[in-house]
Length: 61
Image (cartoon, rainbow, N blue to C red; front, side):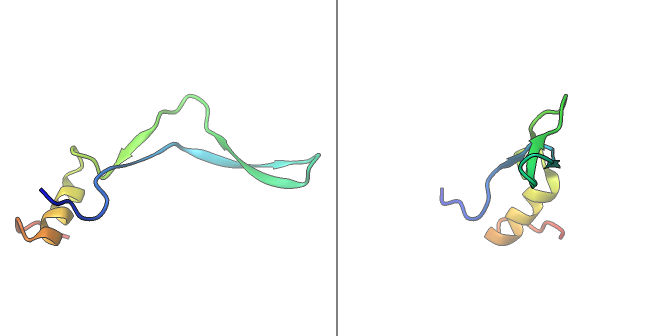
């Protein structure tokens, strides 16, 4: 089986914080949040797009 494109992606919610001492912005993880899967096996919209790209189904975009 040959796969094309993104199969699965995950992200963790973050926010930008200004460090007064170093005078710079830096990302910090949001507290009490979990990693979220984007375009995984349970993502119906992503699966439809994958089928359109491979020609294995009708899918809707």
